[in-house]
Image (cartoon, rainbow, N blue to C red; front, top):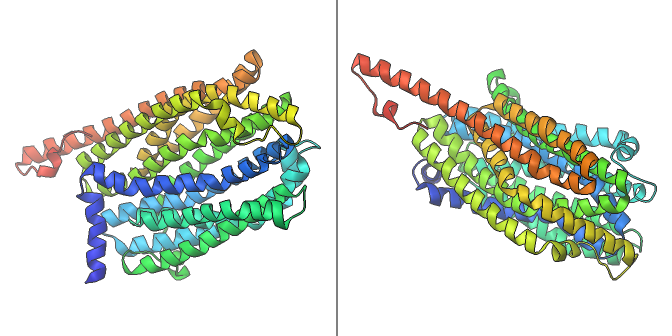
Length: 489
């Protein structure tokens, strides 16, 4: 009886609670977890910056692309499985939902093992391709081995479990696991970097701290996931995973693949940024690396809003409450654009001190550090302008994923990165140098946002035409269902 009541509370949150309150309930813990998860990367950069070594900073910029690939792979089963799980809950198909959850967990483990093996085998040529120089490759190699190869499974599994918990209505538990890992990383970083390991091994120390933090966060999330069994149709039983039929597997991948590709293409774009920046010099690369961490603060907030929105949209889309679905989409859009505007103002005003947070200019090679900070401040003021249009891209993508529009999500991801952002990167760098490289982000994201809004309008138009056709047919038969007469999307 208690379990049924808790399950009903989750359904009331998705389907009946006033939209602003429901969005706040799901988004605030998600934003917190996004911000804390951001600490995983930022805290490493912060403490490495205390050394004043620009080459260590450049090395962590190179490895960031491989760490971000963990996010892409976790989206494959986390967002793909999580969004389908939420739709199945909305349709009251609990047995299928249980199988989807188990398939997502075991799929995440399998893909993590494969990725770790590939990176381990091809690490040296991969780092050289990413732009590693003689001065940076040793640092990059040690970080990649520990975080990406050895620590791959807990990193990807943690994110996948968090997505599934969030879509089952356990946003607080998901946030607690990721947040706890981030806080632990803050504590362990200086211990391993400056106490336990010898001088010159600060990058390896940061990597060990991150791997341990990811592992402990994963163990907590596994505990929370198992505890949620009594309140939601979640499973770890591999027999449930094997019993999942081809139709439901296809629906997971229909959303998961575009979501993974979206993040993967973003990672490809970052690889191109690193390669172009490294072609200028290591200090430009280090400066861009600083910026790519600072600018993730507004991104983390906006992605948190979108991830909080996704299960509400998916649930109401599946249950047929399209008026509530539309209200959720619009409320999230207004909130994200407002936050983006505030972030632009703050980053423009604080570009220099924000950059100095990540590199000490009073130790090590002070001249190189000052030049690096100068590059970072200029790049940050330019790239900060992309925040609102980046949000529109995220918002449209998550909305399409929630509605099961995997093909359009994939098309948007491809066009956004491969047609707009990356070509602008090479073009503007050729015309205006490193400042042009920085300007490619707001220009490319603006073009991507226009295309995303166009795709959303085609989806909404199609749904409205279908509803009008259903309404006309029902009216002609004299048995119009009130739900068929809902307002357009």
